Length: 204
Image (cartoon, rainbow, N blue to C red):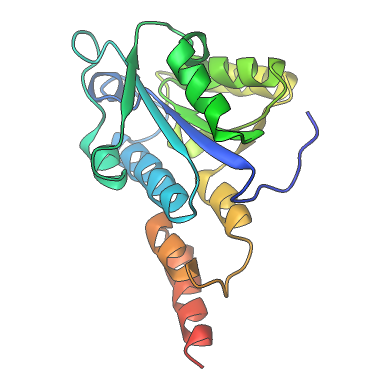
């Protein structure tokens, strides 16, 4: 993979299995932090105009619905693809949804990191896309799983980053009319500072 500049025209987001049942097992970061981060990723991506594909697995049986923070961050009535496959990429509906965006860069987050985020990222790379995993919007069940998952991603050429860095790269211009909304959606202390500054600049 040759990394390129991420833009609002060439990037889509895939959110995999941020479900209540799976969150109960997350141990590599706090579940409140994880819920905050994935909701902020979804909200900022929406404000940037990025296509967001959300998927669950066995929502009616094993793992339950999406966490409420993510539901609230997505546009009202946003579709969620519920599937049975371990690898989201193996579900034709998910694959078609990604392909339909026409975007060659795919930002992925999932629970668990080494399966739900990593497996579709690896598949995306094999299919000619550039894959970026938002590590702090993904979680897993032990430190070992986190470390080995990150190693596997790096070995396969998947870019690992934090969610706000990816979204700020796509924003690109702090003086853009929607910059304040994007920084507000990121919901980070630095984002609030920069968002206030950009609003002040525009008001001059």
